[in-house]
Image (tube, rainbow, N blue to C red; front, side):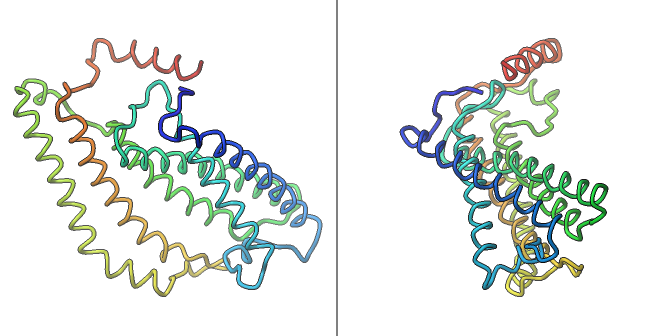
Amino acid sequence: MNQESLWLGPMRKPIRMAAIGFSAVFAVLYVWLIANRLLTEDSIGMYEMIRPEGRPMVQLMLFVILGTVLTLSLYLSDSRGAIEYHPDGVFDIISLVLSRVAMILVALTVLVMFYEVVSRYVFARPTLWANELSLFMASFVFLLAGLYAMQQRSHIRIYVIYDMMPRFFQKVSDIISLFLIWFFTFAMVWGGYDDAMRRFLRMETFGTAWDPPIPGILKGAILIIICLVALQALSNIIADWNKAPEHLSLDDMDEVEIENIRKTLR
């Protein structure tokens, strides 16, 4: 990744140190949780993690997890890969930060599944929460990946007719596409706001043994991230208004993609 600071500037080093510190504490707590779970009967589990009231240790763990995700996301968003668009504006920065959150959630999902496999097949003590937690995090990965794809202009597009148009009509097509995105966003928010707010206010749970508030959180998150996608689409069209369309032709696509992958791996 490009090591030049994109937006943190002088805050890059403090954020990096904070990310290292939080990550180290998180690693220690993760190992401690595994040992405590597997070696003792009276341990802090995920049931307690979503019910932290009156449990200082659980509150500390949640703070460390939040701090780790936040600082790592900020630090990682300050660099970009060889095949990533350079951020242009505040919405691009927000999308990059949230894309790094999605990256971290993938890693956390792997840790959760590793924990479940060891607990189930080595110690014969399967969990009640690993599958639901993995699905919960994966749902956010899916939503945030859509926002990141919009920022990177990497959603599937067909250019056969678009490339034959003069630049003026290309801009008209872009405006029509933006209008359709915003119309869809308006329809989703209009139709889903009341239900999402109702579920959030009562913090609707999943109805299982672990009983996490997945519906109460996810319904609202869907609407929020859809709105961010719409804002990112507007940011894209403003940033690209005076630029020539950038996409690869069929003749050079493979060669360019291979070269970009090589740059990313260096």
